[in-house]
Length: 369
Image (spheres, rainbow, N blue to C red):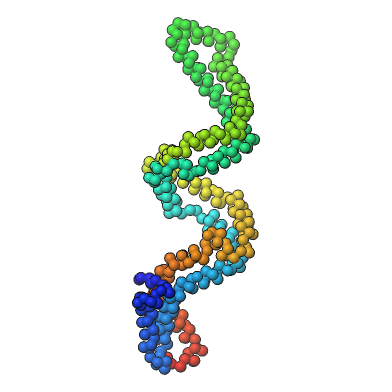
């Protein structure tokens, strides 16, 4: 079934369109109907069904715009309460898991975006402006307390000292073992001296070495932390971040692909999406997230409950011009729907019920079936 375009003001000077031809035919059919004294209920209903379909077809566009103007003038609070929004968010969004179809679409779209050939010719600087990086760097650098906490976490913590102790111990031990093995008789003599030392002091030389390293390395890490906090000023931190960005900003966006795996059964995109889904499914049912969502809806509703729906739509760049474009795009669907058998049947059923009313039957002045 084909749709019909709406007639415009210029069409009046053009030959009859298909819609106009159909209207003319409908008028001709009505004029050919028997006189009022010869009409039956069924013939009248058939004529009315045809007229209503044609009238709605011709008036679909202005009706849609008038409906939008009326709808947009209504205040939000007249039809939607805060409880409605709360229930909608909980029942439709939070209480329902994302369907597998949507998850598949998300993975496929991410794969298309990340591995699109255009990424080979577009630098990272296309995504992030230099001024944005500089602003972020200055913001991070200005938080001295947070910076010192970060330095302490990285340099001055116990775990870092233990890790460095073990690394140096293994390096020294490997060096000594390899050196003694190559020293021949002197090496054997040194191993004998080590054994005698351990017996005399009742302490393992390895343990004593690790204790010594740990004690001194803890002192070194404290000095390193103090030195870093002293010399890494706000300006220096910001400068280092900007320098780091300057080294990578000209690389293509496709460089990101080197950090991802696209092998079947080991896709990084699949792992990332699955991890996000796991976090989302855990959070969407948590009282914590429900509390935040409820508070956010309360805040939004308090700000906009007296606004009209048109005002709220305008904040999303949906105005009358946008609705006209949307209406024009949807008109073919409306035209096709008007000509469907199911709508014709419903109109006929409605009119049949109307004429079946006793008061209407008694007042009819033409032939009954």
